[in-house]
Amino acid sequence: MLICLTASHKNAGFDMLERLSATADAAGPRIRSGHSAVQGAVIVATCNRFEAYLDLDAAEGESPVPAVHEAIRSVGAVAGLEPAQLRTTFGFVHGNAVAGHLFSVASGLESVVVGEGEIAGQVRRSLERARSEGTTTPDLERLFQRASQISRRVKNETGIGNEGRSVVRLALELAESRITDWGQTRVLLVGTGRFAGASLAALRDRGVTDVRVFSPSGRAAKFAANHGIEAVALRDVAAAAVSADVIVTCTTAEHHVVDRALLEAGRAGLEASAAGGAAGSPAFAARSLGLVAEPGEAAVERQLVIDLGLPRNVAPDVVEVAGVELLDLETIRIHAPLEEFGATDAARAIVGGAARAFGEARDEQDVAPAAVALRRHVFDLLDGEIERARSRGDDGRTEEALRHMAGVLLHTPMVRSRELARAGEQRAWIDGLAAVFGVVAETDAAERVSGARDTLRGDARERRA
Image (cartoon, rainbow, N blue to C red; front, top):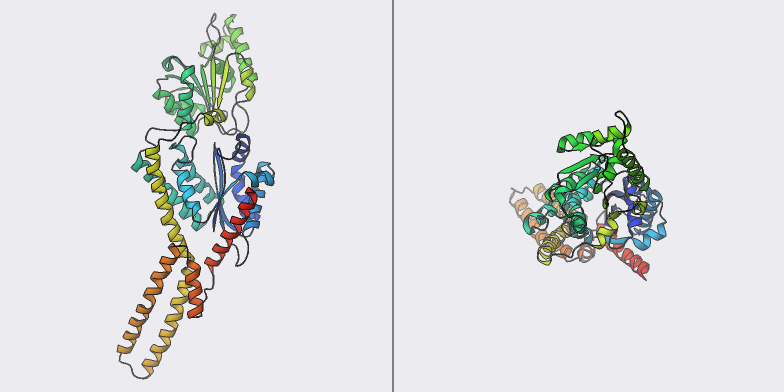
């Protein structure tokens, strides 16, 4: 049984999402080991989303609710959050609706910027991480692989992601009112990961040519060489920061990489440099690198800091420095544009159809044990009759007729099993086999699924009340 616990910009505060995202790597293994019914867990964590996709195997007659509550406790334990707080925040998706939800997420339909391009890769990497941790299952594999296929189809058939939509580009759009000429704008890029590459591409699209990069983890030189920009060393980052018109941060560091102290130290160094310095002094060295203003120049009067990191890369106290404005993910989320309904509707139609097809395939799997039991029952009877015919000297014609008759008898029940499964009426077919033939599957998967859905629906209604 597939279940999704979801917290996003739609139902959770930014502080909670930050805590959940910072500890996401530890959540999957902790959930997997927390309850025997949890067969697998895949965690999707982005700047505006934390989701746990679970594969539960509750024994016959056993409620899955304890396993779900234990999963929530596990998430709370690694994130330092109270389970009660998470239970009232997490959205709950189960059964066939899980496929529709993940397909929609992977296609960018649930993002702050609808159609944004980064999410498909994040979903794919979530599965890869689960594989490396040993927390995935065949059902979760199929679900996530199908999600990647659907996201590509949505992009190719609707064009919803062709405009390069992303949180990065939205942030730069919001910065337009503060920037008079992108071509003359000096930018310090802090970070060297995938978001850094997207940020650099978006900056260049706007005509920015003066970009330097700093990496808290020491990867700036390699990134700079690969992208044709200049790297900033740790000793020079304060000077580079105050000399930039725009600072864009997008690292995975779990501490603030830009704060008031850094900017004030940079300004103090710039003022000392402006007062003059002998060759060989730190001030002279900084000027020679082009990281600070030449003597007589002042620090930038207005400076924009764009924080795309989660956890936050920038301390809130930077706004206490004169002329500094902070644009963070929480602010960006508030200003996200409305959907373009034409492309979005087409994308949702693709997602809906794919989710139904995925659900039908899973529902047919629910009746598979009973179908196997029926076929075994019929063919056991067939083998007995064939053996008797052979003992009476059958020349093969009776055996042929019996095998043909068995195939004809099984055809209609098999067709009806698929029809009823797709209609959500697996129970009727399974009960019919038991009533007419006395056939009972060894693993009555449909009963567990049906009972689990009812229990979890009730639990969700109780939490909302």
